[in-house]
Amino acid sequence: MNPIYVDNNATTQVAPEVVEAMLPYFTELYGNPSSMHRFGGSVAAKLGNAREKVASLLGASSEEILFTSCGTESDSTAIWSALRSNPEKRHIITSRVEHPAIKSLGEYLAENGYRVTFVPVDRRGQLDLDYLKKHLGDDTAVGSFMWANNETGVIFPMEELAGIFSERGVPLHTDAVQAVGKIPIDLSRMKVDMLSISGHKLHGPKGIGVLYVRKGTPFKPFLLGGHQEHGRRAGTENAASIIGMGRACELAAENMEAENKRVRAMRDRLENGLLEAIPGAAVNGDRGKRLPNTTSIAFDAVEGEAILLMMDEFSICASSGSACTSGSLEPSHVLRAMNVPFTSAHGSIRFSLSVYNTDAEMDLIIEKLPPIIARLREMSPFWKGGACAAAFSA
Ligand code: PLP
Image (cartoon, protein in one colour):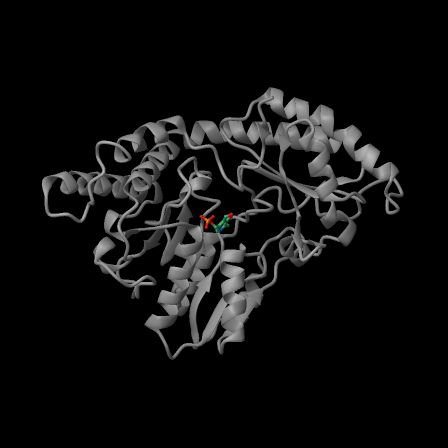
């Protein structure tokens, strides 16, 4: 049975066009782009091409694009670069709902002599901008705020954030791993200083990332060694994946508008169908300001892991809002930061769609999930019936 894959915020299928573009770089075009000879040089020219395609998707110029190994490396590079460029500034500001790529780094820095502010969010998962402004200080080295949340899809007001940070003269980094390729991004219109992308979230390969660094932003490399990427990121270029990333960005730019309409319609069909069929269910997060492909739904008084296992019997692949850490199931830090009550956070499932999904798949989920929830609730000591008082749904 083919999987019904609705876990695209975890990773995406590599587009066939991307695979096709990459293949020659594993076989006949295996030269090292840094070599002096023509064989390597021809690969270098193609990397330049890929860089332009990435830049064009972002409204950036190709000199501002730096290839890395993943979104996590891009995030770390950005933050460490800002800290090393301004060693006298010892304060970082970020949000409570960042991906672990930023969250763990923030916690590490807090334990190692930096002052770190984690800005709270409201029930919709939206930032408390007054809190943010109050805590931006003269000693703030960098701010890092994700463009779109990986669990709820909630979109932060990036243009407004860019205004706040540029007014205060503090560099702004954004983890745009979930946003790029899903919503239009034009960095020529707002002063974001650094931005992270990951190839495998937009139908590119795994193991490739991008860091955009605005021209004029002070920069210190994270990896030291060779002179690749104009001395900004050492290590022989992952040529095939860079080519794949370029093609993935090109496809995203060509198809974004039309595909987004289709993906959004499928997401809404799924969301409305489930909310209608299942009592005590509600959407987590700001339904108005969300990625078109994502819905996080809280099913009150059931366990997310149990839902996932039972959906797996029908080959439905989604994600839960809990992370199994050291044997205990903790609701995710994102849902906790949004004050989603415990019994709802525990039963939260993230469905994240892509252009490869179909309406028929959404209908199958709408058919299979209600009896699963009903069966689990028969066993639940928490289920009292009725509306889900818990999650925010507006
Ligand atoms: N940031 C966000 C918002 C993500 O969703 C992810 C991956 O889930 C990452 C960063 C990490 O990206 P990568 O897997 O390429 O390191």
